[in-house]
Image (cartoon, rainbow, N blue to C red; front, side, top):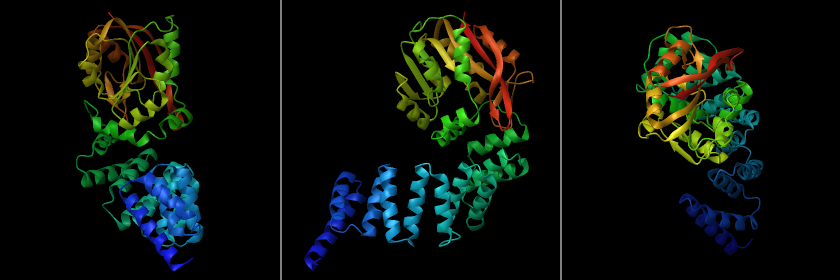
Length: 400
């Protein structure tokens, strides 16, 4: 290669880097690709192309270029870190964990490497290793909030209430307004709460949007939408017999998929914008909106004739606001299909999971107060909680 051609390549590479830094990805990609023809073994070029594709969320192409760059520069910690992140994005969790472990050999105390390794172990359900990784993070950086939050969560699901409370309280020390920590401390100490903070629900479902369907359907054996639809089918209504339906707390659209064919127009609302994004990908709904349920319903008058709330009331304490708001937003003889977790206590209580259980008497009395009459109800298993089934009740109400 001549001095002139080398200088030309360097200038073109600098130009591409400048375009890349300004997020002008198409223009940068065009130059990077043309340069590959001249310097196919330039590790930095492959690294930059990998980064560009990662930013464009084309993780398969990113991994391919990172892999080539890694072959050319196997000891580069930044490259290995991005390579591992890319593996994780592609669902190659065990491979990502191996890459992060390799990276720890270069920087054994790096908190972000240890944190991401902990995240891999958490996804693999290798909780002991996850706890160790997060604790190593905190030994080097005691104010690392995400690691502290994850430790609280892991000790919670491991039934280590003492340590769970310790770390939830540390979360509050670092983030005094953290709604999840506040809520879970109440749940674990058996306290009373009148409402679930919206931010708590939003955070939970934003964090689980990517794996929500798989976890619910495969791990928790969740089948509430199917069971609600079967209960509804026993009433004998024909398809498309409802003009406007609303799916309350629609999530990724599991209930909407089961009930959508019954209605000429389907609206879905949810507090989590990431859940709404997932629902939108399925093409089920005519309208999707990020909204709190009672706020949204209170702005409607006599609009809906079918409403569904599958595994949604379990995130509410008192049910009076939702029954009242739904009464105002619906027409006469509207059907409301919903589920609750069962409680042996007189009204409702917060469970150690952070969800709420409601007694059937309380649900029926509250519904009656706001002109909802039970048409059918059945006790059933809602989901697996570790190795045990969570019992609940499915209801179909109509508005009198």
